[in-house]
Length: 427
Ligand SMILES: *Cc1c(COP(=O)(O)O)cnc(C)c1O
Image 1: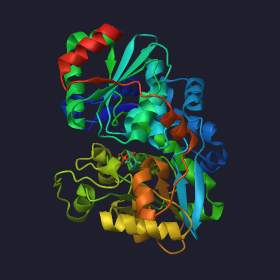
Image 2: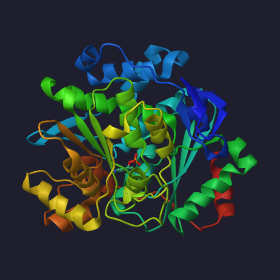
Image 3: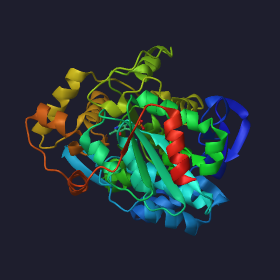
Image 4: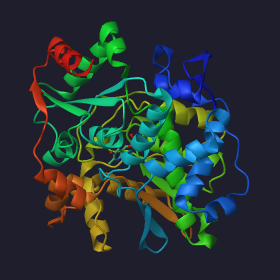
């Protein structure tokens, strides 16, 4: 796979380089220069999830990695199911929350971990990341017990839910967690400091595991094929897929899928009140506002990092603007929609409800609609129980994590303190 930097076309990299580097010069993201369609989509859709995903990833990555290596990586990463559940006539929910941390980020996080373990080839590697909740858990589980890899996770003390925190701070072993006396932004600036610190960088073999890594996006393409494969055959041609969007990585993966041959007639990227993209689609003016906190906090992003990738595909007419919909759903409507879905007998957390609403807004009668459930309702227990007036059962991974002690160490909001601790412990 040949990629180029979308902010500096002279920077060209291979897939392996793009995965190891993460972000390009001038903070530009890497994107494939071209995407070839796959042959015989019907036969592809007839395959099982792991075999099909290996074929898709081999096609996308190309000859940089042998097919049997990719197959092994996929088998390790995608060891949990994807479920398509019918909610109403012609309306289906794609449940992506059956992985170890109960959110779709497990797919990208686990495949990225396979890639980095593969490409570091025994060199000492330290993954350093700051989390505001879901990413930390996905990254920690994905790298847990991988040889030669240590993971350092910083989170703002007391500012993430107990469920989110326990999903990564209880693992131990090669997962090192620090509760910072400060905000998420403070954690992020400590991470940035570490990447500017040459001694720390080389002694620990620092690598970031952030959300713009191309390995995550290609992994996410695979479950869109699985969604269509699980639809009744006669409905495939009319499929309309709605993705709850924050950083726009997930919908970017859906569009990459469409470019290489996935049958999708329409795509919706639905946001919460952080509606920079819906406003841009309406008036072609890029005008991010300050980020607003919402019930769907994983989508509280006003400058989506992956938008340049989506826009590139639209501007190149690889996917038509006519078939791309982007609307926003406010807090009142999010609650109202959660209640409306409950009446159909299904329980959706806030992000999922936003995807449902975006689908219903533009679904053509007679076509098959699919909305994505990006997290298990229990991950947002407080708001779901409060809004829907129900009590949720805790799924096993969450119940198990909640029963274990937190192993995180408290640290001050001070880069030098972090530096001293991680150099002593990990170099
Ligand atoms: C990260 C996340 C999203 C947003 O996905 P993007 O790829 O950033 O658009 C939606 N829902 C949940 C539950 C998430 O964790």
